[in-house]
Image (cartoon, rainbow, N blue to C red; front, side, top):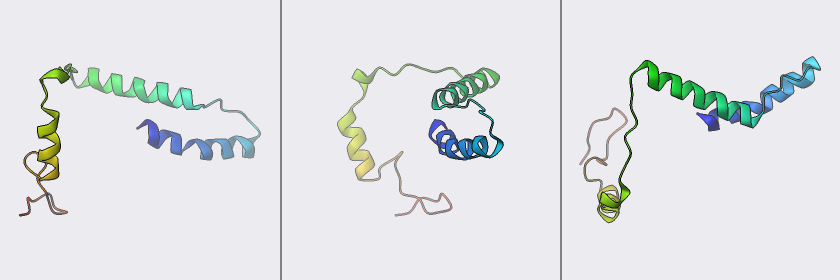
Length: 84
C-alpha cells in the first residue's frame, strides 16, 4: 500500500506546481497515513497479529514446497483452479 501511495507522489507534486500551493504531502506522511489506515482496519475487523517464532519454521521445506508447487503453493490457472 505504501508503494502504491508513493507512486502517486509525482502527481501530487505536479498538482502543487499547477496550483502554486504546497500540499505538504511527503513520503513520510504517505507512509504514516497508510500505516494508520491499516491499524484502523485491523481494529475495525478485530484482527490480531500473531508473532511468528521463526525458529520453529522449516525454511528449507518451505522453499522446496514452493519450488515444487506443493500445497499451499499449488499452481493455479487464471480462475484459481488447481492445475496439474
